[in-house]
Image (cartoon, rainbow, N blue to C red; front, side, top):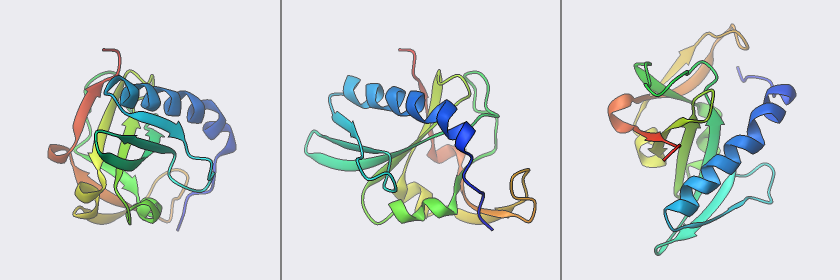
Length: 140
């Protein structure tokens, strides 16, 4: 079962998270722009001989700098972005820190079904081990 689109949450987090991710890539010498395809990957990144997409999310239950969860869960519905090079940046609640993971790491992770508030019957996620995730301080 898939989680329904949450318009209010999207309006609150989408633009600030994309802006923070764009600044992250630009500080590292890449050009980055928002994808004009509203159903495609969030950002298009290019530079240093590479081209890739970047999907951006906010994990609203993550507070502070430390990622205290045993795994990073990425919704299985994001598999539509896995056919081409893609990075995932998942921010904490305040956008001060983020988890960065490449699609190859996501694809080799187990898929699990988890019950949650929006989808009590269970939603499927890539369950990425924290050892394969880079935690970033977005304030530096």
